[in-house]
Image 1 (tube, rainbow, N blue to C red):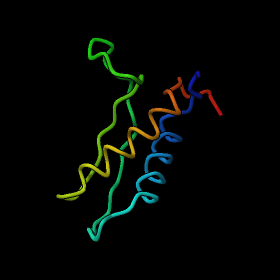
Image 2: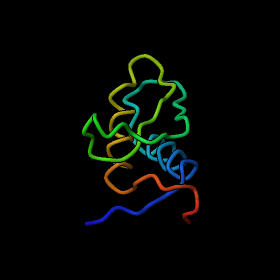
Image 3: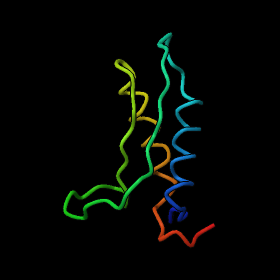
Image 4: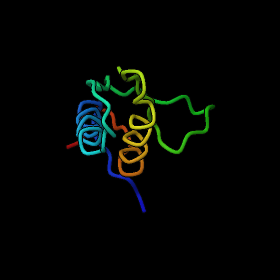
Length: 82
């Protein structure tokens, strides 16, 4: 199944929404994803983008799950997508 193509801003918004939907297991703190950038093809990832995130200590796994959920659905486009 092909993934939809979205802009960096749209993917960042999807990441932030995905993180909000995941259970925090009693942990507090704000997670904030930065704009995704094209991935290095040499890294061999499953999606075509990389992202940096501000993630409070103890919430690394939650951030990884948000990235995995969004990466399964969206690829990064050139900015002209809707």
